[in-house]
Structure formats: structure tokens, C-alpha cells
Length: 411
Ligand code: 3BY
Ligand code: FES
Ligand code: FE
Image 1 (cartoon, rainbow, N blue to C red):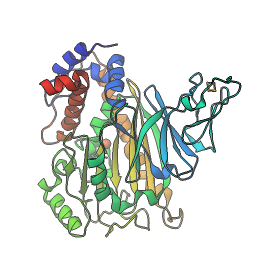
Image 2 (image 1 turned 60 degrees about the vertical axis):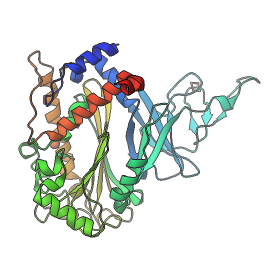
Image 3 (image 1 turned 60 degrees about the horizontal axis):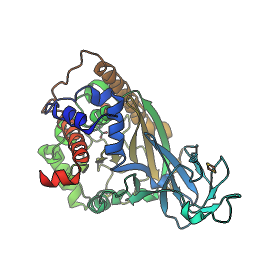
Image 4 (image 1 turned 120 degrees about the vertical axis):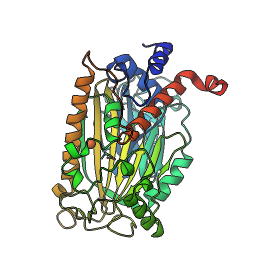
């Protein structure tokens, strides 16, 4: 295990406005430190609530070594538990998703209620106390139809995020959408390379022909800064805000999340190859078709697009030092019917292409970084402000976690 002082030394060796030193991208001990200091401390986007429609609907997710079950209870509340039996630790659910009336461990059939309570354990003796052997609870919050979990003992406050999410995402009424499609891909690259790549569009014109039909690659719109530095961005924000649709760029004081509504190019209204809507039914109460996309990122693991006709959520999970899972979910109005209101291929093709193009880019980025010749290189101030913002957030968060609250207060 890398010592805190070695990790701090590595952090100090980082040059501002440059990509990180090599071990941050390929070293297994740094990866383990990321799990401890970032992934086991911060809020992680787990799923849209629509993925758990009924009592007993569950999904499982692996965050590095931690396995978590998300399940909707009889009281409709979504809860998260450690997917580790309180008998001898077996994983309880091995499927990625399903429906179950109770959670039954496959090893010796210890049976838990959907609220995590141990209901039944065979031949454990008279002095056995089932109430002391419920499933380990993981913090879980629904934020405007998006479920976040936190593995830490004490979870960071979410009130500011919840207030902003209600304003920006509320009009898209995520809880009343349904899943039209979901894809999960594994990228052979460190999770930070996946996030870095998402935070710039310097690569878009060279790599994303279908995305670029409607997505503007102007860094003033999609980079680190306020979108109103672009005339097109300002006009869009003003028009949407006047119609009651919160759209102005807002960023968390700790820079963990940001909302901004950006316009599409020309007459484009969606991510389609002709720019026209992919779904006939508009979502929620978005006032017009050409509302563009409300971009919401939440570090360390999510970026999302809220459109007038559908919503896309993206969840990134670290698998290994050079392996990352990216799950994309396409959501449409719950009454929209495939074949009548939308065509699945038309709805999904732009981002299926884009994800695959991004996968290839970050895998090549990883291979090149693994070379003994790799040296941290400079970011473009004009184009890569968003990458720098992410990397700054990462370094600051890691530094804070390593120093602890006392040292920070004393600084
Ligand atoms: O998906 C996104 O939000 C980002 C923004 C810039 C590149 N990529 C399309
Ligand atoms: Fe789960 Fe034994 S490990 S019942
Ligand atoms: Fe891309």
C-alpha cells in the first residue's frame, strides 16, 4: 500500500495545467488509494430511480472491491446495502438486476427483508440475535430521480445539490420516465482518463461525426467556464430562463458538480443524425422542443444530458487500475411506446457511436501513457479548461482526504 507521504509527494510533483504524472493513471497502489480516498468517501451516482420501478426491484454495482445492492422496499423507498452476507460474508446477489420478494443468500439461505433486516437464519442457537445481523446500510439518496450512494460512515451534505437539482432537473421529471435502453461497456483505461476525456470537446470534431451533428464543440459552452461567455450560450440561457427553465451555469463551491443548459447547433433538438426529435412525447414540462441539453456532471462518476425528448445518464465505475465500466441509460416518457413514439435505433445510435469512439480514444490514451516515454503534457487553456477543472478537483480532494480535517483547519 502506498504511504500517505509518498502519495502527497506524487501530488506535489504535479505541474499545474498539465496531465498527471504516470502513476496516477496506471499504478495499482494509486488506484487503491483512489478507492479509499475518493470512491469510499464521496457520493456516487448509482442509477436513475426508474431502474427500480417496483417493490423488490434491485440492482447491484461494484465500486472497485465494494459490492452494493440497491433495492426498492415495500414502502417504495430505495435503500442501499453492502452486498455481503452477515453470516460468512458471501455476496447475496450476483445478478446485475432483478426482482426479489426477499434477499436470500445463496450460501446458507440467510434471508433478509427488503429493508435489510435479517428475517431467518437456520439453526443458529438460542443466543443468536437476528436484529444484530441486518445488512450493512450504505447511505442512499434520491436526487430528482437519480439515486446516489455513499460508502463513507459520514456522508457529505447533499442539501445544496438537491436544491439545484430540483430546479434544473425537475422540469424533466425523471421519476416519471422509463428506461428505453441501457448499455454497459468496459473501457481498458483508468477511470480518470474516462472523466478527463468527457470534460473537453477538443477531440470532438476529429472523433464524433454523429454527435457533432447537433452538439456544439465550442469550449465556451461545454468547457469549464460559464456558457454565457458565448453569444449563442447567453441567448439560449436568457430564452430558457425567461420561459421558467433554469439554465444558467452553476457550480458547487467545492466544484464536485455543475449544471448548465446549452443550445444545440442550428435547428437541432436532439441527439439524432438529422437533428430532429428522437421521441414524439416531450419529457416532463419542458416548455419547447429546442431547449438544448441541460448538462449535469457529478464527480467522481457521472455526466448527464437532460433534453426535451429524452434523458441520458452516464455512470462510471472503477474496475481496476486500467479498467472502467461506463453504463449509459436512455430514458423516455413513461407513456412513450416503442415503434409508435420512438424508434430505438434512432434514439440510441448517436451515443452508442460516441461511446465507442470515446472508448477507443481513452484506450489509446492509456496505452500511450503506459509508455516509458510518457511525460505530463500541457492542456490547452482555450480548449481544456474542463479537464484542468476535473484534475484540480481530483488533486484537491485527494489532498484533503490525506491530510484530514485537523491539518486542513490548521493550514
Ligand atoms: O458528454 C459530455 O457532456 C461531453 C461534453 C464535451 C464532450 N462530451 C460530449
Ligand atoms: Fe450467507 Fe452463509 S454466507 S448464509
Ligand atoms: Fe468524446
